[in-house]
Length: 307
Image 1: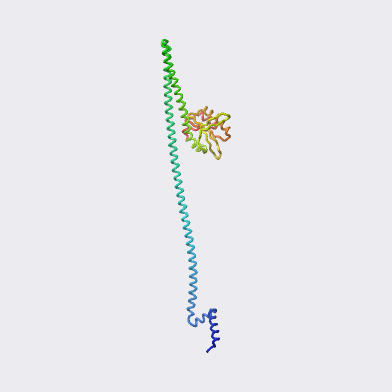
Image 2: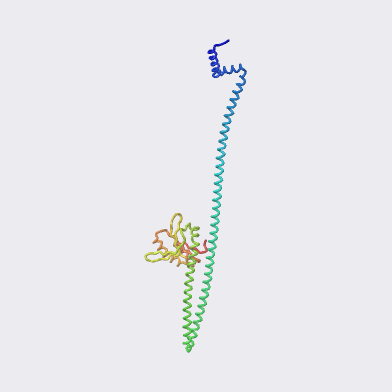
């Protein structure tokens, strides 16, 4: 049957519209022309492809998250390595400090040993001095025996007197020299003992009294009521957060009278300073009477052999 040109064009447009908009019509036409099964398979294939693409996208997202997590993990590992390296460096510095402290301690012990050797040498010199003094007394006794002999011989009086005058002059010179030597030795021993105290006492105070010295001991002169008092060992320190002044004196032998004399002027200084004061005495020998007096007067007595 032949249709007019206008009608055929309208029918064609209508068929194309139905194929585009009406799925059922489209499948019906496809079935008629033998491609229905192909279209269904293509639709299923499209669905599977969409699912596959969706799964692939999720896979890429998960993989991206995995890479990000792995990067953070590597950053954490690097941070841990850097921290470990700093720890090793800190530990090495600590060991260096410990080694330095040990070396300093060794030097301190060596210096202390040298001080003790010097003290022993001074004691030996003192013994020799006493021996010389004893010999001098023996010589003096002999001289007096000679004087008695001179008195018995009146005829040789003038000659004997001349010899006696010479001997007495020599004795006077000898005694003068001996007095100078004894004074110099006493001063040397005193200063040497003070040096020992400057090394020993700060550590003893920290270990036994909990006192931390702010600086080394010094020799200081303090004026009290117009009187200038010399302090052999003066220092400042801290105990339990309290600041205090430390006053000390070094004596080779400490008896009760030395403690009383020290406390007399130490109390004057304490009253003048108006601050908490710690008093101590340091020596080679401490007599029991001195220990008892020290306890009464709250004066710490420290022997050179105490550690």
